[in-house]
Image 1 (cartoon, rainbow, N blue to C red):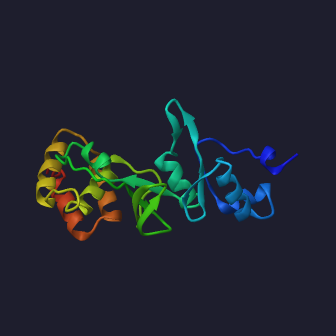
Image 2: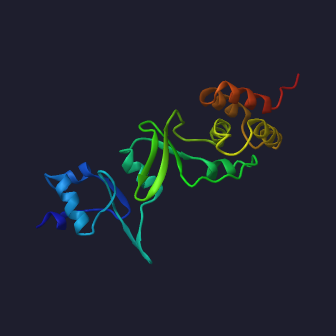
Image 3: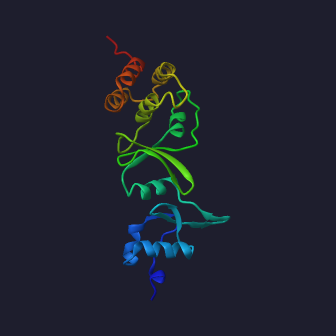
Length: 193
């Protein structure tokens, strides 16, 4: 039985060259052959996708799958306007390039014809809405908002009970600059005496 017949490539999955070593001794040569046969599509140096077939042709891998493959399974989180706008703090910005926090790489990368901005910074394992608030304050300039206007919007949101005050305070202390911490603190309800 040929190696090609034994391959168990999953549709929509991103593979690194070394992932192919389980099917052959010379993974780079196998990758080249699979590209020639149309079974893999090159995304970047050493990164390939086995595309899903959709109603209108080949479907590129999801952004999460691209990052999983590119960062070799390392933890990451997508952030940016999609998350910031949903907080209800008045931002409505859009980026053409997804923003990805991770523990391995920083820079702008093209993967399969799509650009990603990666930043190597601290971030929680499971981001909460409060973390996205702090992240928005940290990226206010990129979001086209002034930190002071965000603080006013956050004050109104806190009055509605939109966020957990203690979690927001702790998140700002852990992930925010001193300026962000001060702005978040000024937006929190004052304790009754």
